Length: 302
Image (cartoon, rainbow, N blue to C red; front, side, top):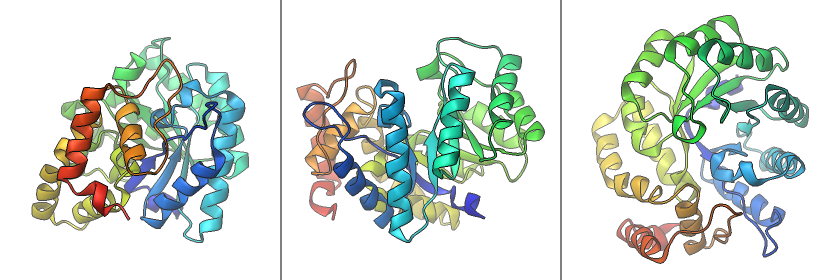
């Protein structure tokens, strides 16, 4: 069953842009191949992919390209498509498109700006779940959306909707994550949405991470999470402490600015971002580059 691949590392793919800020399809394909070759599963059109500033047509194009490259690879990676919205009908439309295009699952963010209450969230997610057959991963990131989905609500959704299969936890609240794992069915997939929380979440029973850092160090992140899934917690603790400064510096400014700059340093793509986001300030670039050097990432990428 392909859901078994939703563990270890799912890279929240960066989106490369040309000089005119249009989608750089060739570079995107090259970057997707780099991720697959290093053992990562794929998330297209997540927060890190700047989905909020892409048109619907660009959003669909990114989904198509990711699915196409995944199918060509021969490695059968899981393709998760970000199709959430603060409009339920819009989320359904994008989700249906992704399903028809051949995505393996959907990442649906808690609706932003509207601030729906918990029973409204049940209606929102249930409506989407009833509109598609693909597995759905709820995405809880209160710092971005201004809203939070409670563990009890998640448990209700998991019990009432067969295809609500898991959650990406990016609340930073370890108590909430613990209660989510405790309340949901044993086969419910709990993934970290924060690289720095991955060790803690997996120690509680989580399966892996939808990762920002894996954009630049996919192989090391796969090794890190595999080590935990194999039960070698002493080695994993050492790796967590080694990578911790990188995890933190990649959020020294709003994501994906820092990791996109790091990707440019590693010649994976340029650092261009669409306004209102911009690349990091000079002093923060120095911090990022210093940590890349300390971890031998600049020399050891390939």
